[in-house]
Image 1 (tube, rainbow, N blue to C red):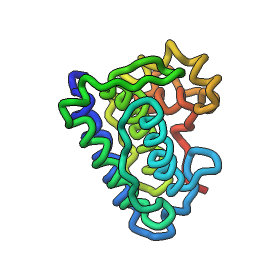
Image 2: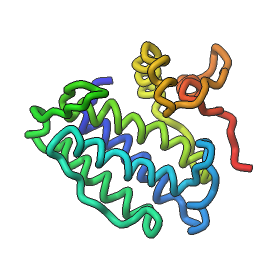
Image 3: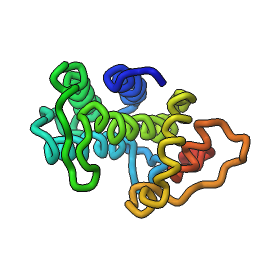
Image 4: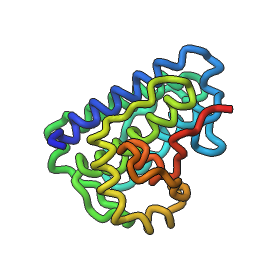
Length: 191
């Protein structure tokens, strides 16, 4: 992929925003997702809650708080999306770093790309599948993520943030291979 971190975030967050805005039924936020124990609202809550603290703990970047996910998941997501995009679009971010004992010292654009944009991308499928929307993910990015994660599988599984690998056919699409790798059943459907 030849996109910058800012360009990739714009695309990935844009696709997630479409799914967030596509939850037209207010009760749609309470449907279960492929992540055990999570509702659609929890998917947005996860993204809005973990990343600002992670970013602030290793840099001097503090994202503004939006409305609560409980009250306004669409608004909460949009505030965060816009704030992260503003960080990536700011030329001074190119020389800023995130220093974290678990990740080492990483340039801010790379940290956002590796830890956050990738998470938004994967959770796009969760939200879409749970709410009956288009589940298609960018196959090129699926392949790039899978290739980047395979060498770190043991550490990823040990972190507890990924479920056990789900077997998929050898000739499965890049999307299904990625989903299986991160512990999702590509055939999952809401009950």
